[in-house]
Image (cartoon, rainbow, N blue to C red; front, side):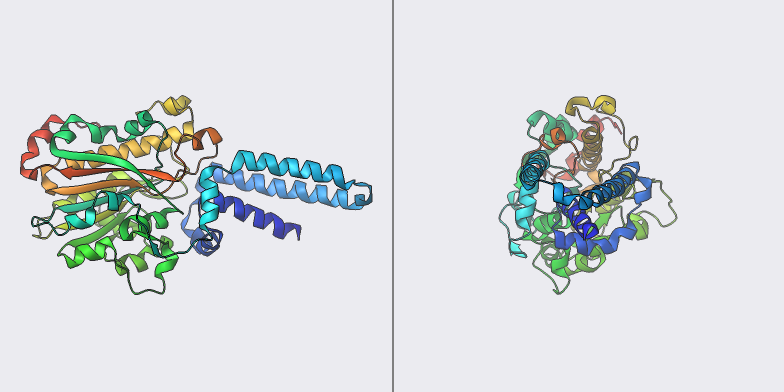
Length: 400
């Protein structure tokens, strides 16, 4: 019985921590083999701590059971309630409260708050001169409470060179659930996750609408296509081409690249960005709808994979080393996207960057730096033909 209670408590903790409904967490255990847990000292430490906690709890309960007739109920209840209150105060953030409530709401229903709605991407597909569309889902990017910190992450995309070529809009949108819920929100404007597409033949989603409008559609990700069944449900929502770890994310088959990440070990986002840019630059006569899900900001972040721009040794402006390392990854994505945006090879391209969910941070001080239940987005809409972007591109010195 004690083991059952302990396992249930651990599952509840993981469910709230990673913002996954309990049913989804249990379902997703089948994908645990895709993770390189042994590569992460953090997760190994957590596992050992849980094992030690269970052993100590078992020993304590066994000793108390021998003299339970001596235990006074009232003091025991007071101490128990005190522990519950402290745990509630420390761990139940607004984000986790929202995540817990979301487990009991209706699924596969339309939403009216999504970055793709605010940026009116659907209407861009029917323009006489159909632009390319690039949607970048940035792993773990929430919406900072501080405008200064948010602009620090977006900084390369707010440069004068980008402003000369694009109309820039930014904002926040409400999120729910984990990454596949973010994908359903932005690509389909639905409150759903990967499980909701299993028994459906399809859904009215942006990739499908783009396909009907004459676009080529493709999805890119540095991790395996079997994770959360993207190989099955992405074609259902309109993606013709899938570029994942299995096919080198669209890079030449013999072009071996280094891998990045710890637990989520896959290609490096910088290399996938290269493949995305090459795909957009292909001259096939058709406009392209491209979705890119980033990977390397996934917790735990491997230090040193991207340029050290934020002085994270002491936590930087975030005063939290883990959050600072994540922010360096987000900032690097902004640099990669800026390089694409200022390249005349990709043609006129609507570019939307948006977070999927809050970063799962251990520290309360780190979690409190984000707006409850919000993620950030930024939209670049080309002002003029890509043929005039060359001057802007030449003015932008490479910095990654």
